[in-house]
Image (tube, rainbow, N blue to C red):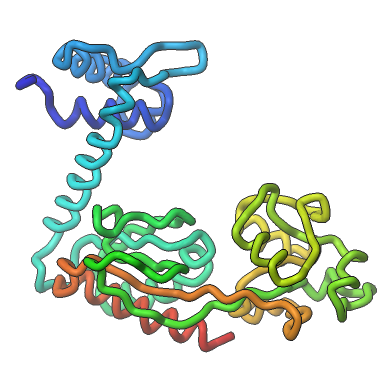
Length: 295
């Protein structure tokens, strides 16, 4: 066991998450034989195989699967250690990892972060666009933007308001077409929506809009791709009202259709007095409040 080192565990984690030696090598920036040797050394130290090889890649053994979360926890701790060591706690400098949904991270945060970077040039932002709520308690992120109320006691949370969702279309799509005035009118239009069941689709159905997957003329589970399709004039879809207003989209059926997403900025309570984290937290609160008010 004394022969186990962190680089071997990193190779194991990359392999189990990527599903192949080649994928692990790309992720780690190493040669494939180096990754293979490190995993073999780990297996020898543990006295058990961690993977079985198949034509489709690497399949974790029962022991390997049992060790996945332990390796991931060590990786998170290592990453958090590096970020914590990137600057002194009283300096607005060093690295802060920010997690937010795809749409917020890609469409709403860049201008906010650009202003922050201008004011604090020694600050480094590591942005994670994901619709999965990264665990702030486990330090997957230092600051997170969440669209659901946080329910963990050890978090500092600030509610910044409600992001409204609405039906939108590009004026080019609507040109020469009858603008829908009622839900029934949408049947004569191409509707943009998900390719599989989603929380937004269920919320739409709960509002009395009788739509299912078969009704969508353009389908994708990517929120970013749906929004790109709306902007390109492919049809009518759901997007954030502030984005639609910013990009000159027509907001359709505003009195009949609306979904509200509560929006929160959160961080771990242990980081509230770390200057770089506090600066990012405060900037996101101010910036997202203005973003919501712009709708």
